[in-house]
Length: 150
Image (tube, rainbow, N blue to C red; front, side, top):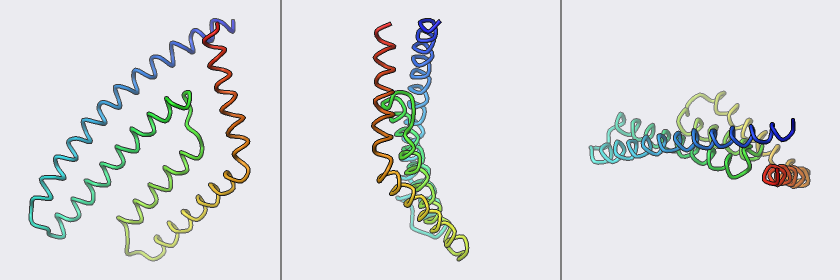
């Protein structure tokens, strides 16, 4: 039964890698289109509306870039994403929101507090999480070795 599961797991991971690769190609195409759009807007005179569109294009470009990096990290880490990486993605998203939505004092305060909370979580993980991370990574490597030997 265990052998059948590892065979199925291997095929599911292969299919997942292929689908994620196709998704990565689509994301690269969209990133290229955002770069072309950005270049055309940069050639136009700088107006407040034009500046707003440029900022949206840049933010969208970096969101696509983060998705590609997350896909690569997922495959590199043995088909899981470390919690630190997810927290860093959240931090980036909050910082991006803070850059775009400025003006409301309460929203700025809440976004700043959420950044502080996530940084504290990263700090705590750095103090205590290194041993858990290495134990988890050793378990993933052990699982991979078992899959290849069966």
